[in-house]
Amino acid sequence: MEIGEGFVLIGEQERQGPTQLAKAEPGRGVVVEQVLFAEVEPWQKGDAVGELHALCTRTHGDQALCQVVLRFGDGDTMTAAGVLPVGDPSFGEGSLTVTGGTGGLRRVQGELVVEVTNPKRWIMIP
Image (cartoon, rainbow, N blue to C red; front, side, top):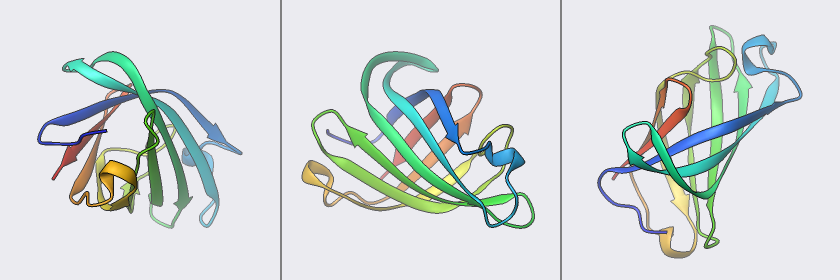
């Protein structure tokens, strides 16, 4: 997977468990999974390109500490972590620090911004 300026993904078909992040008690971790699609026009999805797997732990004050893995169809992965606001039903808009990657993404650096309009929109800022 190649990631450059303006790299945008659409995340849909979200699954959460064992409960929704918005309903979780502080200290409780919630798994969030999405199917990732290439964005062809703003907020319009194209082909499926991978999956997002996240573990978000609810903190006090309506925040969540999130560790995110984006896994692409070619086997490459990108990881990101940080604090996001708790939204309804999962996390809200914010940004995460890209912490690494594998395969063709092993040198990736930058910021992963999430926009929430339903679906979620993931924007890579190198």
